[in-house]
Image 1 (cartoon, helix red, strand yellow):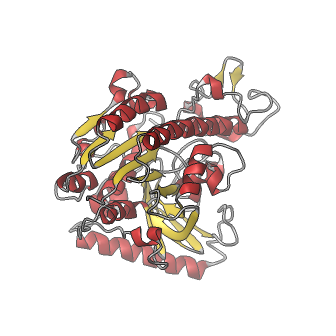
Image 2 (spheres, one colour; image 1 turned 90 degrees about the vertical axis):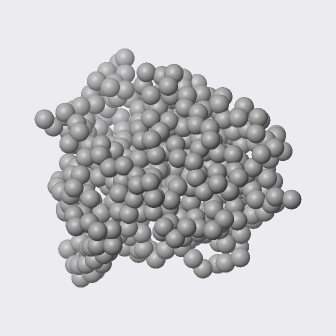
Image 3 (cartoon, rainbow, N blue to C red; image 1 turned 60 degrees about the vertical axis):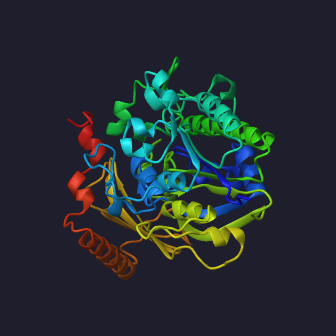
Length: 440
Protein backbone atom coordinates (compact mmCIF):
# COMPACT_ATOMS: atom_id res chain seq x y z
CA UNK A 1 0.00 0.00 0.00
CA UNK A 2 1.26 3.51 -0.89
CA UNK A 3 1.58 5.36 2.43
CA UNK A 4 2.67 8.63 0.86
CA UNK A 5 0.22 11.42 1.60
CA UNK A 6 -1.55 13.49 -0.96
CA UNK A 7 -0.45 17.10 -0.52
CA UNK A 8 -2.76 20.10 -0.57
CA UNK A 9 -0.70 23.29 -0.40
CA UNK A 10 -2.82 26.39 0.24
CA UNK A 11 -1.19 29.78 -0.02
CA UNK A 12 -3.03 33.00 0.78
CA UNK A 13 -1.51 36.11 -0.70
CA UNK A 14 -0.74 39.04 1.62
CA UNK A 15 -1.96 37.20 4.72
CA UNK A 16 -0.07 38.15 7.84
CA UNK A 17 -0.14 35.82 10.82
CA UNK A 18 -0.99 38.80 13.01
CA UNK A 19 -4.53 38.99 11.56
CA UNK A 20 -5.57 35.41 12.42
CA UNK A 21 -7.32 34.34 15.59
CA UNK A 22 -5.08 31.29 16.03
CA UNK A 23 -2.12 33.69 16.21
CA UNK A 24 -3.80 35.88 18.81
CA UNK A 25 -5.71 38.44 16.76
CA UNK A 26 -8.65 39.93 18.61
CA UNK A 27 -11.12 39.95 15.73
CA UNK A 28 -12.88 36.72 14.67
CA UNK A 29 -11.42 36.80 11.15
CA UNK A 30 -10.45 33.15 10.75
CA UNK A 31 -12.76 30.52 12.29
CA UNK A 32 -12.02 27.91 9.62
CA UNK A 33 -8.27 28.41 9.72
CA UNK A 34 -8.41 28.39 13.50
CA UNK A 35 -10.25 25.06 13.34
CA UNK A 36 -7.63 23.70 10.95
CA UNK A 37 -4.92 24.71 13.41
CA UNK A 38 -6.78 22.97 16.24
CA UNK A 39 -6.84 19.80 14.14
CA UNK A 40 -3.14 19.94 13.34
CA UNK A 41 0.09 21.76 14.07
CA UNK A 42 0.42 25.53 14.21
CA UNK A 43 3.94 26.79 13.52
CA UNK A 44 4.26 29.93 15.57
CA UNK A 45 7.09 31.64 13.71
CA UNK A 46 7.42 31.22 9.96
CA UNK A 47 9.37 34.07 8.37
CA UNK A 48 9.77 35.17 4.76
CA UNK A 49 13.31 35.45 3.40
CA UNK A 50 11.92 37.59 0.56
CA UNK A 51 9.14 39.99 -0.29
CA UNK A 52 7.13 40.67 -2.42
CA UNK A 53 5.13 37.93 -4.19
CA UNK A 54 7.30 36.61 -7.02
CA UNK A 55 10.53 36.31 -4.99
CA UNK A 56 8.63 34.72 -2.10
CA UNK A 57 6.87 32.08 -4.22
CA UNK A 58 10.12 31.29 -6.01
CA UNK A 59 11.66 30.68 -2.59
CA UNK A 60 8.69 28.50 -1.61
CA UNK A 61 9.11 26.29 -4.67
CA UNK A 62 12.90 26.09 -4.86
CA UNK A 63 13.75 25.85 -1.17
CA UNK A 64 16.47 28.41 -1.88
CA UNK A 65 17.24 31.84 -0.53
CA UNK A 66 16.58 34.57 -3.14
CA UNK A 67 20.26 35.48 -3.22
CA UNK A 68 20.76 31.98 -4.61
CA UNK A 69 17.85 31.65 -7.05
CA UNK A 70 18.32 35.29 -8.10
CA UNK A 71 14.69 36.47 -8.13
CA UNK A 72 14.55 39.48 -5.81
CA UNK A 73 11.94 41.76 -7.38
CA UNK A 74 8.91 41.96 -9.65
CA UNK A 75 10.09 44.07 -12.60
CA UNK A 76 13.16 41.91 -13.00
CA UNK A 77 14.81 40.66 -16.17
CA UNK A 78 16.17 37.61 -14.41
CA UNK A 79 14.83 34.17 -15.18
CA UNK A 80 14.97 31.24 -12.83
CA UNK A 81 17.78 28.93 -13.93
CA UNK A 82 16.77 25.59 -15.39
CA UNK A 83 19.00 23.87 -12.85
CA UNK A 84 17.10 25.32 -9.87
CA UNK A 85 15.26 22.67 -7.85
CA UNK A 86 11.48 22.92 -8.09
CA UNK A 87 9.07 21.17 -5.75
CA UNK A 88 6.27 20.16 -8.20
CA UNK A 89 8.81 18.69 -10.61
CA UNK A 90 10.19 16.31 -7.99
CA UNK A 91 6.69 15.26 -6.96
CA UNK A 92 5.67 14.72 -10.58
CA UNK A 93 8.73 12.52 -11.15
CA UNK A 94 7.81 10.52 -8.04
CA UNK A 95 4.39 9.64 -9.44
CA UNK A 96 2.20 12.42 -8.04
CA UNK A 97 -0.48 13.96 -10.22
CA UNK A 98 0.33 17.65 -9.95
CA UNK A 99 -2.06 20.57 -10.32
CA UNK A 100 -1.92 24.31 -9.66
CA UNK A 101 -5.00 26.49 -9.43
CA UNK A 102 -3.17 29.74 -9.75
CA UNK A 103 -2.17 32.63 -12.02
CA UNK A 104 1.52 33.10 -11.21
CA UNK A 105 2.59 31.56 -14.52
CA UNK A 106 1.14 34.58 -16.30
CA UNK A 107 3.90 36.62 -14.66
CA UNK A 108 6.76 34.12 -14.94
CA UNK A 109 6.73 30.86 -16.88
CA UNK A 110 8.81 28.96 -14.33
CA UNK A 111 5.83 28.78 -11.99
CA UNK A 112 4.39 26.12 -14.30
CA UNK A 113 7.33 23.74 -13.94
CA UNK A 114 6.35 20.25 -12.92
CA UNK A 115 2.59 20.74 -13.21
CA UNK A 116 0.59 18.32 -15.32
CA UNK A 117 -2.47 20.54 -14.80
CA UNK A 118 -2.31 24.32 -14.57
CA UNK A 119 -5.71 25.94 -14.09
CA UNK A 120 -5.84 29.72 -14.25
CA UNK A 121 -9.28 31.30 -13.79
CA UNK A 122 -7.74 34.78 -14.09
CA UNK A 123 -7.80 34.61 -17.88
CA UNK A 124 -11.53 35.33 -17.64
CA UNK A 125 -10.85 38.68 -15.95
CA UNK A 126 -9.54 41.94 -17.37
CA UNK A 127 -7.76 42.67 -14.08
CA UNK A 128 -5.94 39.33 -14.19
CA UNK A 129 -5.29 37.84 -10.79
CA UNK A 130 -6.62 40.77 -8.78
CA UNK A 131 -10.19 39.94 -9.81
CA UNK A 132 -9.99 36.21 -9.11
CA UNK A 133 -12.22 35.28 -6.19
CA UNK A 134 -12.32 32.39 -3.76
CA UNK A 135 -15.38 31.12 -5.59
CA UNK A 136 -13.51 31.19 -8.91
CA UNK A 137 -10.65 29.16 -7.50
CA UNK A 138 -12.74 26.67 -5.55
CA UNK A 139 -15.01 26.14 -8.55
CA UNK A 140 -11.95 24.77 -10.33
CA UNK A 141 -10.11 23.09 -7.45
CA UNK A 142 -12.99 21.11 -5.93
CA UNK A 143 -14.09 19.39 -9.17
CA UNK A 144 -10.42 18.59 -9.86
CA UNK A 145 -10.20 16.94 -6.43
CA UNK A 146 -13.29 14.84 -7.16
CA UNK A 147 -11.87 13.77 -10.52
CA UNK A 148 -8.50 12.73 -9.04
CA UNK A 149 -9.57 11.36 -5.68
CA UNK A 150 -8.04 7.95 -6.34
CA UNK A 151 -4.61 9.25 -7.42
CA UNK A 152 -1.69 10.44 -5.30
CA UNK A 153 -1.85 14.18 -5.91
CA UNK A 154 -0.13 17.46 -5.20
CA UNK A 155 -2.60 20.33 -5.46
CA UNK A 156 -1.48 23.92 -5.03
CA UNK A 157 -4.14 26.62 -4.70
CA UNK A 158 -3.26 30.28 -4.49
CA UNK A 159 -5.94 32.59 -3.06
CA UNK A 160 -5.39 36.27 -3.86
CA UNK A 161 -7.65 37.73 -1.18
CA UNK A 162 -6.75 39.69 0.94
CA UNK A 163 -4.29 41.24 -1.54
CA UNK A 164 -4.77 44.90 -2.40
CA UNK A 165 -7.22 46.36 -3.33
CA UNK A 166 -9.25 45.55 -0.25
CA UNK A 167 -12.61 44.93 -1.88
CA UNK A 168 -14.55 42.29 0.09
CA UNK A 169 -17.98 41.14 -1.10
CA UNK A 170 -20.85 43.26 0.11
CA UNK A 171 -22.07 40.57 2.51
CA UNK A 172 -18.93 41.07 4.62
CA UNK A 173 -18.99 44.87 4.69
CA UNK A 174 -20.82 45.10 8.01
CA UNK A 175 -18.00 43.34 9.88
CA UNK A 176 -15.61 45.20 12.18
CA UNK A 177 -16.61 48.71 11.02
CA UNK A 178 -17.75 51.52 13.27
CA UNK A 179 -18.32 55.20 12.61
CA UNK A 180 -17.99 57.29 9.48
CA UNK A 181 -15.00 56.32 7.30
CA UNK A 182 -14.91 59.83 5.78
CA UNK A 183 -15.23 61.75 9.06
CA UNK A 184 -13.38 65.05 8.50
CA UNK A 185 -12.42 65.12 12.18
CA UNK A 186 -10.54 61.84 11.86
CA UNK A 187 -6.93 62.54 10.95
CA UNK A 188 -5.43 59.06 11.15
CA UNK A 189 -4.66 59.08 7.41
CA UNK A 190 -3.40 62.65 7.10
CA UNK A 191 0.23 61.56 6.82
CA UNK A 192 -0.67 59.00 4.16
CA UNK A 193 -2.47 61.46 1.93
CA UNK A 194 0.64 63.66 1.97
CA UNK A 195 2.93 60.76 1.06
CA UNK A 196 3.73 60.21 -2.66
CA UNK A 197 2.15 56.75 -2.62
CA UNK A 198 -0.93 58.16 -0.90
CA UNK A 199 -1.21 60.98 -3.42
CA UNK A 200 -1.14 58.37 -6.20
CA UNK A 201 -3.93 56.40 -4.46
CA UNK A 202 -6.37 59.26 -3.90
CA UNK A 203 -8.70 58.29 -6.73
CA UNK A 204 -8.60 54.53 -6.21
CA UNK A 205 -10.52 52.20 -3.91
CA UNK A 206 -9.59 54.46 -0.95
CA UNK A 207 -12.41 56.81 -1.90
CA UNK A 208 -16.10 56.17 -1.19
CA UNK A 209 -19.19 57.80 -2.68
CA UNK A 210 -19.11 60.17 0.31
CA UNK A 211 -15.54 61.24 -0.24
CA UNK A 212 -11.97 60.40 0.64
CA UNK A 213 -11.45 57.87 3.44
CA UNK A 214 -10.00 59.48 6.54
CA UNK A 215 -10.14 56.57 9.00
CA UNK A 216 -7.20 54.15 8.96
CA UNK A 217 -9.15 51.71 11.11
CA UNK A 218 -11.83 51.51 8.44
CA UNK A 219 -9.24 50.33 5.91
CA UNK A 220 -7.90 47.79 8.39
CA UNK A 221 -11.47 46.54 8.76
CA UNK A 222 -11.67 46.11 4.98
CA UNK A 223 -8.55 43.98 5.09
CA UNK A 224 -10.00 41.92 7.93
CA UNK A 225 -13.22 41.46 5.97
CA UNK A 226 -11.12 40.10 3.11
CA UNK A 227 -9.43 37.71 5.55
CA UNK A 228 -12.83 36.55 6.77
CA UNK A 229 -13.91 36.05 3.16
CA UNK A 230 -10.88 33.96 2.20
CA UNK A 231 -11.32 32.01 5.44
CA UNK A 232 -14.75 30.94 4.19
CA UNK A 233 -13.12 29.87 0.94
CA UNK A 234 -10.60 27.77 2.84
CA UNK A 235 -13.42 26.26 4.87
CA UNK A 236 -15.29 25.28 1.72
CA UNK A 237 -12.19 23.62 0.26
CA UNK A 238 -11.35 21.69 3.43
CA UNK A 239 -14.97 20.57 3.78
CA UNK A 240 -14.91 19.20 0.23
CA UNK A 241 -11.63 17.40 0.89
CA UNK A 242 -12.97 15.80 4.05
CA UNK A 243 -16.30 14.80 2.46
CA UNK A 244 -14.32 12.96 -0.21
CA UNK A 245 -12.76 10.86 2.55
CA UNK A 246 -9.33 12.37 2.01
CA UNK A 247 -8.59 13.76 5.49
CA UNK A 248 -6.47 10.78 6.55
CA UNK A 249 -4.81 10.57 3.15
CA UNK A 250 -3.92 14.22 2.64
CA UNK A 251 -1.30 16.46 4.18
CA UNK A 252 -2.80 19.95 4.27
CA UNK A 253 -0.37 22.88 4.47
CA UNK A 254 -1.64 26.46 4.72
CA UNK A 255 0.71 29.41 4.48
CA UNK A 256 1.20 32.83 2.87
CA UNK A 257 3.80 34.66 0.82
CA UNK A 258 4.03 37.77 3.02
CA UNK A 259 1.94 39.85 5.36
CA UNK A 260 0.62 43.38 5.06
CA UNK A 261 1.40 46.60 6.85
CA UNK A 262 -1.71 48.49 7.85
CA UNK A 263 -0.17 51.62 9.35
CA UNK A 264 2.89 50.19 11.09
CA UNK A 265 6.03 52.29 10.64
CA UNK A 266 4.09 54.76 8.53
CA UNK A 267 3.62 52.17 5.78
CA UNK A 268 -0.04 52.19 4.81
CA UNK A 269 -1.78 49.16 3.30
CA UNK A 270 1.30 47.81 1.53
CA UNK A 271 3.59 44.80 1.73
CA UNK A 272 6.97 46.36 2.07
CA UNK A 273 9.12 46.97 5.10
CA UNK A 274 11.10 44.17 6.73
CA UNK A 275 9.05 44.28 9.92
CA UNK A 276 7.30 41.28 11.41
CA UNK A 277 3.85 42.45 10.27
CA UNK A 278 5.11 41.72 6.75
CA UNK A 279 7.66 38.94 7.31
CA UNK A 280 5.66 36.76 9.73
CA UNK A 281 3.18 34.55 7.88
CA UNK A 282 0.98 31.65 9.01
CA UNK A 283 1.91 28.01 8.72
CA UNK A 284 -0.68 25.40 9.65
CA UNK A 285 -0.15 21.70 8.91
CA UNK A 286 -2.76 18.95 9.24
CA UNK A 287 -2.62 15.25 8.44
CA UNK A 288 -5.42 13.55 10.32
CA UNK A 289 -4.35 10.47 12.33
CA UNK A 290 -0.71 10.98 11.35
CA UNK A 291 0.30 14.30 12.91
CA UNK A 292 -0.57 15.49 16.40
CA UNK A 293 -3.47 17.90 16.81
CA UNK A 294 -3.65 21.13 18.74
CA UNK A 295 0.15 21.44 18.91
CA UNK A 296 2.14 24.66 18.54
CA UNK A 297 5.74 24.65 17.31
CA UNK A 298 7.73 27.59 18.70
CA UNK A 299 10.74 27.08 16.43
CA UNK A 300 11.85 29.77 13.97
CA UNK A 301 11.23 28.49 10.45
CA UNK A 302 11.47 30.13 7.05
CA UNK A 303 9.59 29.75 3.78
CA UNK A 304 12.52 27.97 2.13
CA UNK A 305 12.01 25.12 4.63
CA UNK A 306 8.59 24.16 3.24
CA UNK A 307 9.72 22.42 0.03
CA UNK A 308 12.23 20.10 1.73
CA UNK A 309 9.66 19.33 4.42
CA UNK A 310 7.07 18.27 1.85
CA UNK A 311 9.62 16.14 0.02
CA UNK A 312 10.52 14.34 3.24
CA UNK A 313 6.83 13.87 4.05
CA UNK A 314 6.47 12.20 0.63
CA UNK A 315 9.39 9.89 1.38
CA UNK A 316 11.65 11.59 -1.16
CA UNK A 317 15.23 12.68 -0.78
CA UNK A 318 15.88 16.40 -0.52
CA UNK A 319 18.24 17.67 -3.24
CA UNK A 320 21.40 19.31 -2.00
CA UNK A 321 20.57 22.41 -4.03
CA UNK A 322 17.70 23.12 -1.65
CA UNK A 323 19.04 25.26 1.19
CA UNK A 324 15.99 25.06 3.44
CA UNK A 325 15.82 22.57 6.28
CA UNK A 326 13.07 20.02 6.56
CA UNK A 327 11.09 20.36 9.79
CA UNK A 328 9.06 17.20 9.16
CA UNK A 329 10.35 15.49 12.30
CA UNK A 330 9.42 18.52 14.36
CA UNK A 331 5.89 18.16 13.01
CA UNK A 332 5.70 14.46 13.81
CA UNK A 333 7.19 14.97 17.27
CA UNK A 334 10.18 12.72 16.54
CA UNK A 335 12.50 15.66 17.22
CA UNK A 336 12.20 18.66 19.51
CA UNK A 337 15.28 20.63 18.47
CA UNK A 338 15.43 22.42 15.14
CA UNK A 339 14.66 25.61 13.29
CA UNK A 340 16.96 28.56 12.72
CA UNK A 341 18.91 30.77 15.08
CA UNK A 342 18.80 33.60 12.53
CA UNK A 343 16.89 34.47 9.37
CA UNK A 344 18.15 36.82 6.66
CA UNK A 345 15.51 38.54 4.54
CA UNK A 346 15.51 41.02 1.69
CA UNK A 347 13.14 43.26 -0.17
CA UNK A 348 13.49 45.06 -3.47
CA UNK A 349 10.22 46.95 -3.88
CA UNK A 350 9.71 50.59 -2.98
CA UNK A 351 12.65 49.94 -0.68
CA UNK A 352 15.93 48.05 -1.09
CA UNK A 353 16.82 46.53 2.28
CA UNK A 354 18.27 43.54 4.08
CA UNK A 355 17.45 42.27 7.55
CA UNK A 356 19.10 39.89 9.98
CA UNK A 357 16.79 38.52 12.66
CA UNK A 358 17.62 36.52 15.75
CA UNK A 359 15.31 35.53 18.59
CA UNK A 360 16.11 38.79 20.37
CA UNK A 361 17.19 41.33 17.78
CA UNK A 362 16.43 42.46 14.26
CA UNK A 363 18.88 44.57 12.29
CA UNK A 364 17.75 46.27 9.07
CA UNK A 365 20.19 47.70 6.54
CA UNK A 366 19.12 49.94 3.64
CA UNK A 367 20.95 49.91 0.33
CA UNK A 368 19.16 53.05 -0.85
CA UNK A 369 17.19 55.77 0.96
CA UNK A 370 13.58 54.74 1.48
CA UNK A 371 10.36 56.66 0.85
CA UNK A 372 9.70 57.24 4.53
CA UNK A 373 12.90 58.89 5.68
CA UNK A 374 13.89 55.99 7.92
CA UNK A 375 17.38 55.55 9.20
CA UNK A 376 19.61 53.48 6.87
CA UNK A 377 20.31 51.26 9.88
CA UNK A 378 17.67 50.04 12.31
CA UNK A 379 17.93 47.78 15.34
CA UNK A 380 15.03 46.43 17.39
CA UNK A 381 15.00 44.46 20.60
CA UNK A 382 12.21 41.99 19.79
CA UNK A 383 11.90 40.77 23.37
CA UNK A 384 11.40 44.24 24.87
CA UNK A 385 9.75 45.76 21.78
CA UNK A 386 7.93 43.08 19.75
CA UNK A 387 6.11 45.67 17.63
CA UNK A 388 9.45 47.17 16.55
CA UNK A 389 8.54 50.71 17.52
CA UNK A 390 11.87 51.85 18.93
CA UNK A 391 14.99 51.94 16.80
CA UNK A 392 17.85 51.44 19.25
CA UNK A 393 20.67 51.43 16.73
CA UNK A 394 22.49 54.28 18.49
CA UNK A 395 21.88 52.95 22.01
CA UNK A 396 23.12 49.45 21.13
CA UNK A 397 25.75 50.41 18.59
CA UNK A 398 28.03 47.45 19.36
CA UNK A 399 25.23 44.95 18.73
CA UNK A 400 24.24 46.77 15.56
CA UNK A 401 27.82 46.81 14.29
CA UNK A 402 28.27 43.10 14.98
CA UNK A 403 25.01 42.22 13.22
CA UNK A 404 25.87 44.43 10.27
CA UNK A 405 29.27 42.77 9.92
CA UNK A 406 27.64 39.34 10.09
CA UNK A 407 25.05 40.30 7.48
CA UNK A 408 27.58 41.83 5.09
CA UNK A 409 29.86 38.83 5.50
CA UNK A 410 27.03 36.43 4.72
CA UNK A 411 26.05 38.41 1.61
CA UNK A 412 29.65 38.53 0.39
CA UNK A 413 30.11 34.79 0.93
CA UNK A 414 26.93 33.94 -0.94
CA UNK A 415 27.81 36.22 -3.85
CA UNK A 416 31.27 34.72 -4.09
CA UNK A 417 29.85 31.19 -4.05
CA UNK A 418 27.60 32.06 -7.00
CA UNK A 419 30.28 33.85 -8.98
CA UNK A 420 28.69 37.27 -8.66
CA UNK A 421 30.11 40.51 -7.32
CA UNK A 422 27.26 42.97 -6.87
CA UNK A 423 24.48 42.84 -4.31
CA UNK A 424 21.28 42.08 -6.30
CA UNK A 425 19.47 44.89 -4.51
CA UNK A 426 21.98 47.31 -5.99
CA UNK A 427 21.70 45.64 -9.38
CA UNK A 428 17.92 46.05 -9.49
CA UNK A 429 17.55 49.18 -7.39
CA UNK A 430 14.27 50.25 -5.83
CA UNK A 431 12.47 48.21 -8.44
CA UNK A 432 8.83 49.25 -8.06
CA UNK A 433 9.79 52.90 -7.85
CA UNK A 434 11.89 52.48 -10.97
CA UNK A 435 8.97 50.84 -12.78
CA UNK A 436 6.42 53.46 -11.68
CA UNK A 437 5.57 56.81 -13.18
CA UNK A 438 4.60 58.17 -9.75
CA UNK A 439 7.98 59.73 -9.13
CA UNK A 440 8.85 60.78 -12.69
